[in-house]
Length: 397
Image (cartoon, helix red, strand yellow):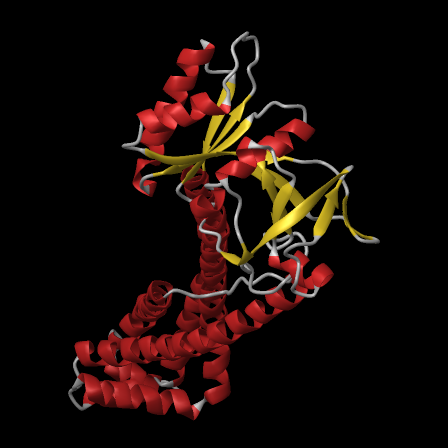
């Protein structure tokens, strides 16, 4: 008997008892849909984290200076020299000074706006564009001018799109708005990059105690994250005489660590979800054993007419594999539907643009596993059918 004939017979037998076949497939459907959604959720989390870290700069290093137990201090000129001396790995540097204080615009107060002191190179380092006015300049740092650049959220919300030339108050000090940063987020919201104020770092340091303890350094290439971190640590250790007086953090390394953690979590969850595939396989084995019992006389007639054990074996294995494969196809369709629903729920409830995206590899693997389970769990009933004695089978009632 040809495989095409075995497949045709398998389809005919499946269609003869649709409800029983569907209930048999249910474990496979649930297992594949669950694996797809979980793997899709993992892919979505990875993509979301990648986008988030890219917005912060995956080619950046953050340097925090503590100076514990050391009489030595590192100023911005020395940091600029360290970067210049290691230009093979390090590209640009900007002091970053966090400014505390209530932000007031006229009679209104903004509670979540971030205020940061940066250099004139910061916008280029972070790939931020200026949509109105100008960016911060070296003269602003040199003369410690009370000027600032604001995000598009502030520009639209409080100034109706005409912020340049107006003033904004942070704490007890007023700043003239000289530029507006182009919109970075998909939607203008609080607590995003668009809800930010950038001052000259020298001005921010003057109003924040005078000490600069944080720097942002860009790499010439993301591949140099380890080398760049090493040269910075070596230079700072030489100055301080200790490696406990500072900390250098690589965004790329943090992203890799978080990605590994997500992968481990998703693998564990996918393995748990895959248990339902085994349950589905047991269901297929059970229904095939019932089918062999119900069709014992048919098997006896076929063997009496000359059908070989191999032919009977292939027929029942094909039927089990076909049942499992159809369940796999339905499971893939259900998995896509649940992934779309999960994406809508995440976007609606969490206000986060994270999509549940099953990968082509996971879908192919799920379908392959479903077919393999059909063959694996269908072999024992098929073997039992093939080994039936034709005389005993013909006597069976």
